Length: 269
Figure (spheres, rainbow, N blue to C red):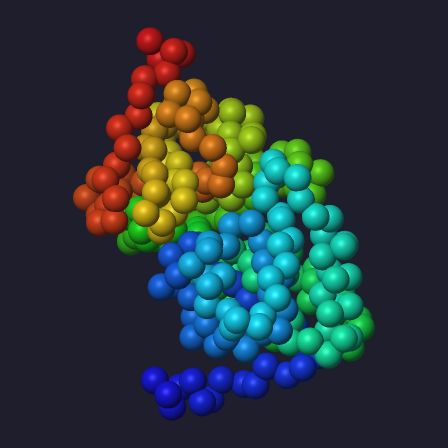
């Protein structure tokens, strides 16, 4: 272990590390992420990062909360990015910590482009995305040879907070498995779009909240009933929505937490 840690690049003063914290369980952090947390002078972190992960910083590290949680008051992305630039110019070792992976719906690319434009050295430390690690904890493999040979990741809202203007018809018809990040606000609209473009109304859907954490919840439902079942079971963001046949494997492979039995919605009575 010490041999591996000795080969981790030095965290240079005046540089920024864009680090993925993974889906939540601190044990899923990478070694690079842990070492970066130990060395950082300033930690700029998002809302979904747990206290257990924040506790890995040194006693002298300053923690700055940067918000960024869907549907909640948040810092503007421009202000966060400019703050990274300012701190780096002050000669700090700046660690920007994000849930999941910095480059998967994490705005890490926007921050990296700004740092590059300012000639500020940066390093990207990938994290396990909830669409991969979170599903593994629910017993839903992202791919399975008897179920699918492709999967699509899509965000449930765009920069303005509305349903993204992606080609939902092509996604519905072309991807056997669809993983939707940040889609709870528009779950009814999204499921209706998928059905209108040919997905079966009774196709399996899983909604996963707090993936990999002790309070993880998994709701299995269908495309036609998902929106009502979310309300009936008091599901709130952050949550991941998974559509496709791999959801059916949850009942056999759900090793971490037992399945939540959905309450019957009023629409289904």
